[in-house]
Length: 571
Image (tube, rainbow, N blue to C red; front, side, top):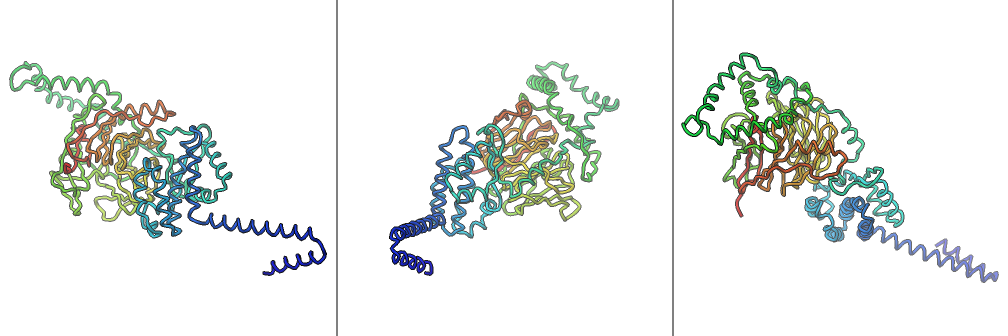
């Protein structure tokens, strides 16, 4: 009121003195200032309302889709994080109806890449749900990391400055970190980790992945015993065992009960021929570096060691021409109550875990693919976001690995027992040092929860399978994805390497077992390190079951592949 009184007094003074032109100029200036103030107030109300999210996102979306094709695929990466956080900000502000309209209006743009995330976020109906639903809590507590080239990043900054979209600028600054690289934009194909969540401290992730990894196999292993020169007594013993087979070969093959079938002889010749051809390829384990164990390993009984060595001597060499035989165990009448299963290395034991908290074991004695390769120690994963290492002689865990942002769904020992890998619903795989309990690698690239892990026998590579049916092969030393592939149409529940590491077997909820040529893919990745091929792993064979999802795969020491699953009801 004081300002208005001053203005009236000034106008009266000018009128009294006869300054008519000055009075008119003052009135025009007062009207202009009043109009500008009212306009700014209306714009401010619009900017603070829920419509600012839909308007800002619509303009950003239109600009990204109308960009040059060379940079479009990189600019489109920004849309999903902005879309998610605009939706959650609307819900957090109490604008639930506007948030639902916004969610369904633009949902179709992201269904092909993020369908499972959208299905989980669809249940958010109140601000309280943002804290109750784990995925939304993870999105709000951590930043997205987006990779793009320098020119694409400059284009985005120019757009935000030109449009003065403070809402979109605030969402991007608060929830997105950009990894800007010089040069041309990255390829749109095979770029599996273009939008990821790493947590607030991305520098810590880079620091972790720079730690040294000793990926070799254990020194003084039974494999080394098999490679040592055979003594004269052992040669004489093996020669005595081979007397009868030699006699049988000399007998006519067309008759007599003791004669060897012609088909068997042909098969033996094929195996021997293939074995000679792939001898150089199957020596990956023998040439792998030898690593000292960090854990105190138990002693192996002489009888057990001899049995293992016998299995190793009888091992069939596998490659793309010689595929493994498969022995499949089917659980029937389980009524969808089987949650997990495991097979011992010799196939003499099959264990199943059921939804009524019971564990049933068929046949002999030892269980668990989660035991370390030398036994005695075992690892467990939990929905408390941790993994734990245990020993058979203690009831308390030896180590607790904490760091995942969500449930830990699978765990796998490294070949030398010095590391374990964990897969989580936060879409990452982590490698842990069992001695210190520290995370030494974080593998980022999956777009859904990780359900299965497998380590190559030489300890250099790791395979991981996720809920979408994608399998990724990782180099532990560099932490990079060697070869991603999409072959299954549903969850990959189990993975297993052959004993010499030349084949990878995968089992899925789509009721198939698939065999992949690992040797060719890793060789191609080394020769084509700059290539962006998205599917280097060559599928050798797909083996469908009648109606049984594959829960477990396990190669025996003789390279026989064991599998297990629960018979599902036919539709």
